[in-house]
Amino acid sequence: MNKNFFKVAAFYTFTDLSNLGELQKTFINFLKKEDIKGSVLLACEGINGTVAGTKAGIENFKNFLKSNDLYNSHNFKTSFCADHPFPRLKVKLKNEIVSLGNELADPAKIVGEYVQPEDWNKLISQDDVLVLDTRNNYEFSIGTFKESIHPETTNFREFPEWLEDLESSGINKNKKVAMFCTGGIRCEKASSLMKKKGFKNIYHLQGGILNYMEKVQAEDSLWEGECFVFDDRVALNHNLEVGSYDMCHGCRMPITDANKLEKEYVKGVSCSKCFYEKTFDQKKRYADRQKQVDLAKLRNEKHIGAIVQSSKK
Image (tube, rainbow, N blue to C red; front, side, top):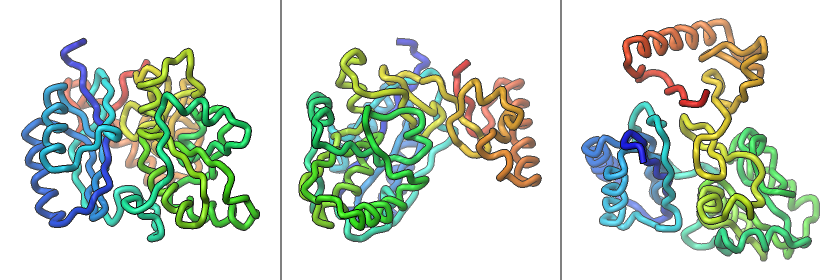
């Protein structure tokens, strides 16, 4: 493997945490020492994040999590990329490690039944199973499992409202529901909420789509498309390699090469999805930022204030 490749780790653990301020300092000091960048969220309910560094650095980070009782092997997934997917390190304190905004959901007490990737195809191929994609519209739009439905949300905090509508429709709460998301964390909250509301047969893909792609061969896969990830790789294919999408740096939505040919697309500024929503001042600010990015590239530097361009051609 190319020695310049970066190892990316996506992880989460639901566990009771206290002294968050001190824990935040501990994480920052360790990650800086290992030259690891990315985003880490800390809350009383646990930890969630995606970071990238050298292969040795990420291995040391895994051991760091273990030493602090914050490691869960099912929820620690790695992949590789040629360019660093994060411009900086952020360790933030939050009320939730994934924001649902409904106190009924408590994954530490109740969740759905975990399904291993090797058993997922059999489950979702059953006629009496509702396959639920708990991710947002833009994620669903570039890839999902066959026959799945999605709540048409733009933000995970909208899921409880969608669930209320589902209940109002008179759905049979004994129906089998198989849900999935990118790494598994949103399903922890969503399945917990559904169980609390009386749904009996809730299943979720352990480790999420990323775990499925790692464990299930492409020729056996029921996944269609690519998987959106929340870093500068934008999307991954079934081999966990950087996919075919780029990102609009105005609205952070995934875009294709065809989208870049549209008149509304301006590199670093806008695409057809956001061109008419951005103000003149916003577009000017984005254009100035892009100019600084281009100048930094000419100096063979990385502009820290910008989102690093992916390496896709």
